[in-house]
Amino acid sequence: MFQEKIKKSIELFFEKADQLGEYLTNHPEISGQEAESCKFITGFLEEQGYEITAPIADMPHSFLAVDKKRKDFAGKKAAFLCEYDALPEVGHACGHSYSCAISILGALALRDAYPELPMRIDLVGTPGEEFVGGKCYMTQRGAFDEYEYAAMIHLYNRDITHFEILASNDRYFTFHGKAAHASAFPEKGRNALNAARLYMEAMDMWRQHITKDCQFHGIVVKGGEAPNIVPEEVSLDYYYRAATLENLWNLNKISETCAQGAAMATGTTVEWEQRYPDYGEIYWNEFMDEFMEKLFRNVGRQTHPSPGPGGSSDIGNVNLRIPVFHPLLDITGCDESCVIHDRKFEELLHTPSAKKALYDGAHIMAELAYHLAVEPEYLDQMKKDHAEYRKL
Image (cartoon, rainbow, N blue to C red):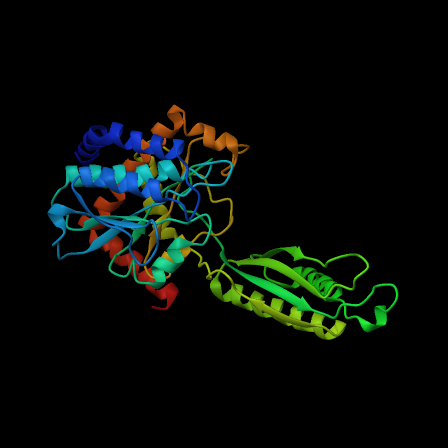
C-alpha cells in the first residue's frame, strides 16, 4: 500500500521536478553565484504552495521552504537539503542539479501521499558546497538546530548507503626571510624558500607515523621573486584530512610544529592562518546502514560497500548537530571509470539515467522520511547513537 501510494505521488510531480533538474543542469552557476538557480527553485516551490524565506542564516542564495498548510505545525521537523552550485568549466559534473531535484520531488510526493504525516519536512537550500562550505556557516548560525535529522542524495557511479567523508581543514603558511643578492651577498640573506622546503620535507617524513586515515596535500603559492634574489617571502597552501575531527586537530598540531621547526632551522619566521572552517566527518553506523540498504532494495537497487573515505564536504558539519543521511545513487551503470567532477559524468545528466535516479532517489527520500515519522523507534535509536558519538 505504501509503495504504490508513493509511486503515484512521484508520478504526479515527476515531470515538473525533471524540468527543474534540467534547468539547473543547463544553467550552471558556481559556488557563491547561485542567484538565478536559487530564484528559479524558490519560484518553483512557491507555485507548489511553499512559503519561502531567503536568504537564511546570513548565507547568500540560501532558502528555507515550508509548506504553507503546515507552517504552524508544532511537532517534529526534518530537513531535505538542496545543493545547486556547479563547478567551473564542467558545470554540474557534481550532479547537484538532479540531487536538488531529488530532494524536492521526494518532499512533494510525501506531502501529497501523507499530508498529515506526524513530522514536517522542510526544504533547505544550501549553496556553496563546492567552495566556501556554505553548510559550515549555516550550521554555526543555527540553521539546522530545530531539525531531527537532515537528508539528501548525491549522484555517483555506484549505489552506496552513505558518503564516507573525511574531516578537513587548511593552513596557509607564510615564511619570512631576508632578501639579498644571491651571488654577491648570500650570507646576508635568510632563505624563506629553504624554510618552506624543510617544512614540506618534515611533513613527508611524518607520513609513516600518522594514522592511516590522515592525509595532507599542499602547493607553493609564492616561491620567490627572481633566482638571483634570496627569497624573502614564501607561501604554502595546505589541506589536511582525517577520519575524525580529533585526528584532524592532532595532524594540525604536527603541521604547526614542523613549520616552527623549519623556521628555527633556517633563521626565518613563520605565520599561518586557517582560511576556511573545519569540515566535520559524517557519523554512520551498522544500524543506519541496514536501514538505508533496505530502502535501496525497495527501488530495485543493490548497494555496494563503501570504497572508503573520499574527500570532504560541508554536510559533515550539519552532522555535528544532527543525524545526516547522505547516500550515493548510481547514474553510470556502475562504470567506475566515470567519476564525479568529470565531463562524462555531466553528460549523463542529459540522459535517461538521470531521470531514473530522480525517480528512485525521490522514492528513497520519501520512504526514509515516512518510516522515521511513523516509526519513531528508528529515529530515536539513530539520535541516541549520534549523540553518544558526538558527546552531545
